[in-house]
Amino acid sequence: MNRKEQFLKDAENKAFDLEHRRKLLHNIGQYDKKVVQGKSQFVDLNAAREQAKNIKWATMEKLDHYLLMFERNISARGGQVIWAEDGEEAVQAVLDICKKKNLKTAVKSKSMVTEEIHLNDHLEKNDISVLETDLGEYIVQLEGSRPYHIVTPVMQKSKEDVADLFHKKFDTAKDSTPEFLTKLVRKQLRSEYPKADLGITGGNFLVADTGSVVVVTNEGNARLSTAFPKVHIAIVGIEKIIPSINDLELFLPLLSTYGTGQRVTVYNSIFNGPKQKGETDGPEEMYVILLDNGRTNILAQKDKRESLYCIRCGSCLNACPIYKNVGGHTYETVYSGPIGSVISPQLNDLQEHRHLSESSSLCGNCTASCPLKINIHEMLLYNRRDASSQESSFSENLTWKVWRTGMLNRSLMNMGGGLKNMGFKNIFEKSWGKRRAMPEFPKKTFNQLWKKLER
Ligand code: SF4
Image (cartoon, rainbow, N blue to C red; front, side):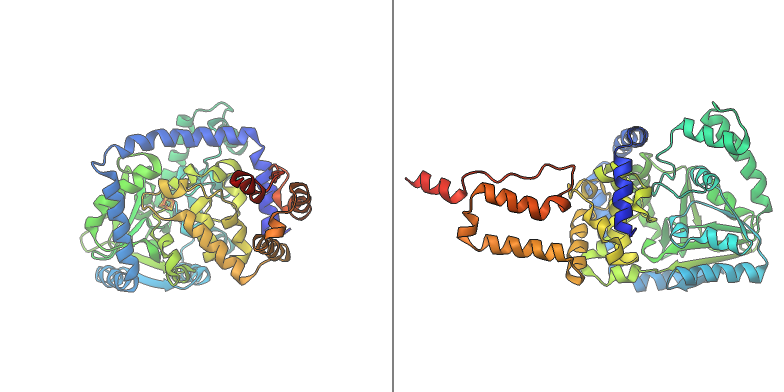
C-alpha cells in the first residue's frame, strides 16, 4: 500500500470513529475557549499579526545574514554551532558528541525537530537512553507512539485513556486522577535530571542579535533538562531565527495565545551559551545544531517561502476540518494538519506526499487562524500545481482533456443532460468517492434556457 492509499484507508477509519471525534473535538474545544481569552490581551491583534509577519518576511529574505549573526554571537559566549544539511548529519553530530564525551543518558525537552530526524530511535540504537520530560511526550514515549499534534502530543486522549495507560505500565489505579499521575511523573523525572549526562532541547526561537536559543514550556522541564547535565545540545530548524531579543515581546505572547490561549507561556528560557565563569548552574558545553533538512528548498521557492514563517503554534490544526476528522496520525508525517500538508511535501518527496495537499477543503480556516497570516490554503494549491506539472496520472490527464474539449465545443455543451450524466458517471464515479452525491446536469442546457429567454 502506498502512502496515499494508507492515508485514505486511515482517514476513512478515523472519520467514522465517533469516539475519536468526540475526544478530539472536546480537547480542541477546550483550547479554542482559552484562545479567545488570550487574544484579548492585544490592544490591536491585527497589527501585532501584521508586524510579526513583516518581521519574519524581512528575516527570511536575509536568512544567511541573521544565521551568521546568531553564530557569531553565541560562539562569543562559548556555544558551538554545527550546521546540518539534513537529518542524517544532525543525528551524526549528536552521536559524535555523545561518543567524544562518553554521554550515556539523556533527558529531552519537547521538540518537533528531533521527531523530524527520529533522534530517539538513533540514540537508543547506540545505547544512549533518552527520557522525554514533557508530560505529553512522556505519555507518547510510554505508549511507544508518535505525537498527535504539534503542540499537544496526546490531543486525542481523554484523561481516562491516560489513566488506563498508566495502569497498564505502572499498575496505578484505573481511575487515577490527572493530578495524581502528574505528581507521579514529576517525582520520577526529578530523580532522573541530576543523573543525566546530556540535555536535549529544540528551540522555539533563535535570536540573532544576542545569539540566544529560546525554549518555552509550561512545565519547567527545559530548564531542568539543561541545568543539570554537563552537555546541552539544542537542535533547531534554521527558520526559527528572529533578528532581535526585542522581537520576543511580540512573538512570545503570539505563540502562547495561539498555541494554548495563555497570555504567556509559564517558563520562557533563554540560553546564551554554556555555563560562564562564576555561574553555578548550566552545562559545561552547549552545542546548537542548525538544521536545514529541506528548508532551503522551501526558501528557494518564492511562492512557498511564507511557510517558513511558521512558529509551530498548532492553531491551524485546531481550525482544520480535515485534521478534526482524520486526526494527527493519519498524516503519517511529523508535521500534521494544514501547515504539515504544506511543508511535508517540501521537506520530503513531493510526489509521495502530494495527497496531503490534495486532502483539503480549501476553506481557508487555516489561514484565518494563523497568527502569522500565512497563506496556507494558497500554498496547498501551489503544491498541487507543482505536483501535477511534474507528474499527472492518466485519469487526471483524461479528465482535463474531456473537460477542455467539452468547454470548447458548443454542440457538446448542448448535449442532453441524460447523456452528460451518463458520461460523467462512467468517467468519474470512482474518483468522485462513494461519500459524495454525483452532480446532476440539468435537463435543459444554458443555451436552450437563454434562447427561450430571448424569445
Ligand atoms: S502555520 Fe500558522 S497557525 Fe499553523 S502552526 Fe504555523 S504559525 Fe501556527
